[in-house]
Image (cartoon, rainbow, N blue to C red; front, top):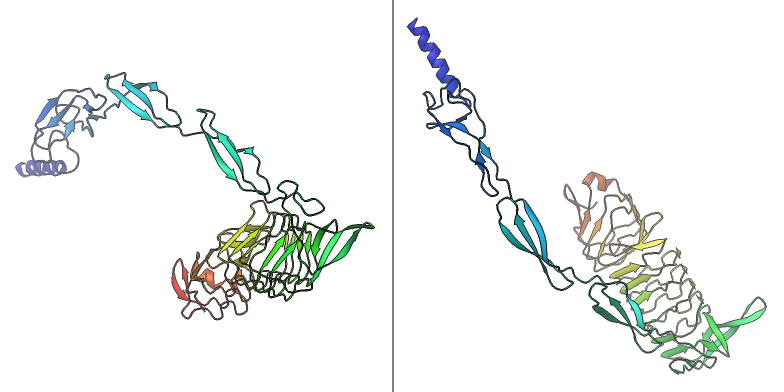
Length: 440
């Protein structure tokens, strides 16, 4: 019997060595020595506790003195302040306010700053209308405090010409360049204007006025200035509707031209081989013909207006220096993102720059899109991509990394066109999300 009793006692002690205490025994190897802990009410910042018993030896807590009802946690969390709030000083556009918080429980008081709201300016409104030569001004006002901001409106450059090519606003007189030839344009059986057809004498500067013989100059004819390498500056005051095929082809020295609003079409090869520093297409322009800006290799900026709907094949082929590509946000056919010109309908990159990140959602890199971008060091391509067109990255001699936002297996499934990466930098790699791999 004694041996049996010793086994029972040992078993009981073994249970007490666990996480819970049973029938007054503790993990310290003896019965719990419990002391009563009185209840303490929690305050705003100090925690309290319920009334309970705690073992002096092991620290375990119980609801009863015998230690038969373990208590996991006797603590009562701090209550936090129960504050009422009063604004002592309202915040203004430029000055902070003051919010007073008073705790209804403990009476603690705190003043908290209210940040200044900042001005709530309305839309800008024209206060001084710009003219053709003088700047204007527009203003916006904060309705809360009456503060106002103004900014300059640039001179419109929109002269109002009389039949003698004198501006009725600023009195500027435009003299037509000698040696220009024109042909009469007949519409609905009546003389509507003139088409500029030729330049008979070499000129470094050419001025095309609004009117010729009292009628507007409506277009530049086919090959009108073709091969005039001496032209460096061209001032177009005419209300042109069209620039026909080859109009300025091989005008190598023509470095700048402002295409007028109202222009509707640019023909094939119209500016092929010109030395344009930028290509800015007005909002009125609807179509650009094949090879229109072919090999304008000095152009660093391409800007597409809101009405452009048709771009001919290789229209911007050979524009090797492009670093900035933009398009009007309301153009329904083309968009610019990641420094790329993208056809909205088929999600194809038509033109890329020397710094481009092709956005997610694009399906195709078009033929010749990045051809000859010799300053392109790296390019980011989306996981959505399904094909890369012919010659798309050919002659990108500095291209070292293609960052592809998919796996290597997915990259291998992207269709690649003819000579898409010919003459790129040796050792070109594709950086996939599962590692770097040599481009096949």
